[in-house]
Length: 180
Figure (cartoon, rainbow, N blue to C red):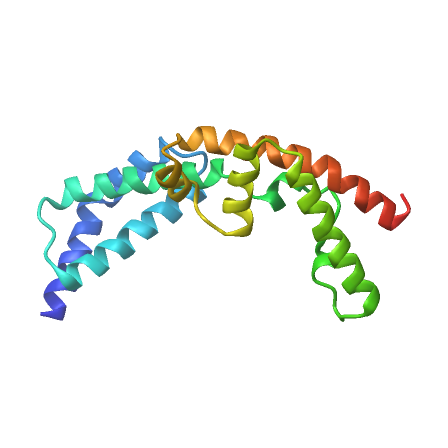
């Protein structure tokens, strides 16, 4: 039985691999991403054939490829707070996650959170709520969209406005703490 599954998998890769890679490559930015997506598809196929047979394998493969490509673009569009700060922006990790807990680091951490919450209170409620749900409560944009019945792109935009405001406000704190 195991040999049949392995044979099926190898035959499928041989029959569909080249065309599937070409399909993916035309839709993503680089070859490395295309290879990663293809590997995810082969892995998902290997899991599927262990549980149930896949009918219309070609159609299934291309559907999974489209879904993986869409997922990649969704993840790319969701900019996390760390990504928004970028390389030239302040490194708050020394304040939030110091090597040792001293009274000074505890004070700085408390000051940071106090300033963050004060800056959040300055935002319109929709922007504040999206930021809190996505960054602090770790909800996906899709989950937030389902809760609020608001389009994902609208939520991403609201979060972006919140991040721009927070970046400006927290940069002031960072400069004060580092004497810049």
